[in-house]
Length: 401
Image 1 (tube, one colour):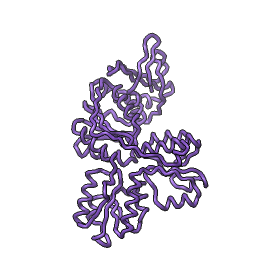
Image 2 (image 1 turned 90 degrees about the horizontal axis):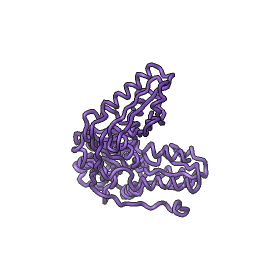
Image 3 (image 1 turned 180 degrees about the vertical axis):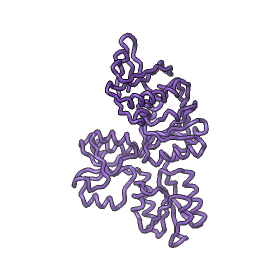
Image 4 (image 1 turned 90 degrees about the vertical axis):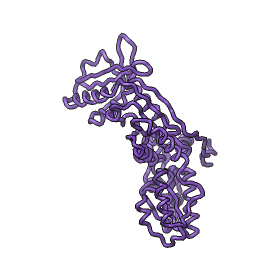
């Protein structure tokens, strides 16, 4: 896979669109490696393909070469992948960026906690679950010495463990105490707020209806605050069926990363059934989730397809895909540029681009660069609000900073 096309007698050409070609090769079962492709010395390859395309910042290349030992099946797959990418290359396109996008304050805080601990104490630093739901973030921290575990019994007694941004139940905190672990809590303060509300309302004798998705780590942690008085409600249909001991003492709370529109429908159904229903003083769906949905809504109808950068276990990223589709615009979740399928770009002139709150902003930049490697590209941005929220770090980390 060419990062760069090299000639002996003329300047080299960068290949920013190589990620799309690499992804297409992998989907066709071809193992890849990245590096420069020497155009004048690839005659020994089973198949060598290259192209030079017009782009916004001068010519851009695409190139791939299979080794001399490659089978005829591999050679055919390489040729088909190159043809698929070239079929959507060369035409002018535009990208409209939604703003805000990418990291929120809670995610930045959680990642910085692990980074500081690694710098201060060295590895290993244990993290229960993924610190945030993004594969690139987790892989990067793992390479620096973070060890991600599903449960605390995988952490040596007395070691340092970080609780992820999604929060944990009281039972997990008690287990950490029993194992004498040095806990550094990276729970997002907005998730901590929901936990406090669950304790308060349950302590007043209410039944707490928690709107959220079963199995999500944030939901599991909140349910653990008052399991005997909390009922999970995942949909309007479940809201129609849920039963409570005392309809006059019912409170709702929500997961912080839900669809604003769909959650409103669930709450409306619950209010219809329980007129005395109470809720939190301020919305539980966090500012970052709301802002990113508002920004996505503002661009979706003006684009032909929407790409959302984020991992598949990221709730807020999935909600962005669903929101775009509800507006009538096709949308796709991608971890990075390699996940972009050429057929998504067929006949497309206007691409909407955003990223979930746990996706690094650099991934958005790399997607723009990859799209720019296919042909002339203009880039614009539509900002619906500007975020200035910052959360302080835990004292255990600040003391040694």
